Image: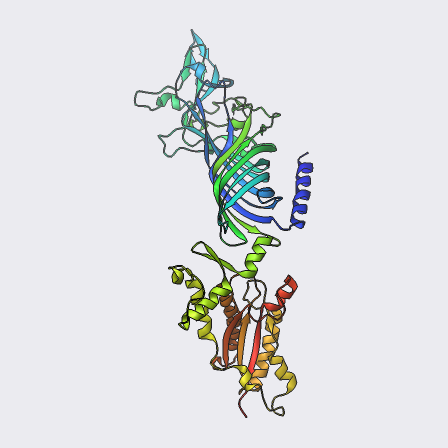
Length: 537
């Protein structure tokens, strides 16, 4: 049944991945908070039971598809860590009725009584706990299926709210338990004793100073400082938990980092619906040894042969569930095409100034007019300089890096000196991936050929112009084009070309090789152009 459910969800997950279109998002998220398995213990007479959630977390990724601007559906894969501490708080040396009964045994080493009264050989083996802590740790593979609601505000929709409701399908992949030992010898966790019915005597007993009576301790009873060193854990400390379904609720804020990237901050709560406990196993919390307990009358016999089973699988617990809540942060990346509104904004590169909307091309012209002390062509706000500082800085940076001479002045060369085929190769462009400036293998092959030609003709200089497509704003594209030109220059210099023979500049999106009407054309505009400079005749 588990395999069928997971297989169906993975098919749906694959369909979602293949069918990404407008309105689809990839989300990477993580959360942290109290997370654990919960249970309630009943009929525990020898201790006061407690169940405490500990700090856990979850992390994963998912895909969302919004059918409308406000409503969507998401599916993902998470890995979660749940931690719980089960406590049995009790007191040593209470009445016999307040102990855990392990069975009846025969004392062959230290009989009590006299020949007249008879020897006491039969006793009941008992255990009591104090400061007992069992640590439970569960790792879950989770598949969340959530209905999402979102609402963004403002003209630029830079801020919004989101709400998610749905379910998680949880499959335990690792479940284990262990016993937390005491921090000192005074922090004892377990006491083992024997009750002799014929003499109405329970051994050992504590003296007023808290120590065990020495004559009794040699009989093989007493406290255990570190139980994990003595007790045998059932199934080597592994828990047997089952498939679970939990309800999920999420809410928070959305902060737009760019047209394609959102940051989500909020909270979550997961509440398990099913019983994760394996009902086929109903173990005793403590199980006595199979042979006589006090054989050998050695002090080290304390705890020897006693087996301990987990609280979650004991007769005191009928139901085990899960709960998790806390804070969550995520990054959401928009896939596919932008919306029509976003496409329009990208094409005209609109900014908002003083509550008014201006195309960036007009503002760039306004900057140039201001640089030349011409009348201001647009009604700009008072804080014009501070708002447009990124655009001004980008333009200034680009202007400073434009070469003092242009290649068109020196396009003539001696045909007999410079072979046409090699000179034409110097003009060969190289291409880059979207928003990248690292050199691809195809570009490196072209640059290696340029290195050979420049080494053969050391009087030729080179200008490298970095270009971009129309995606993104102008300040960013100016710098991206410059990084692409720098990448080619650095490669040529590192391969022996004198840095003084190479100059770089950026043309941003303003010199496209092809019209930016589709993705195929844009791949031809993400490039470096090369212009050789030949010596004058």
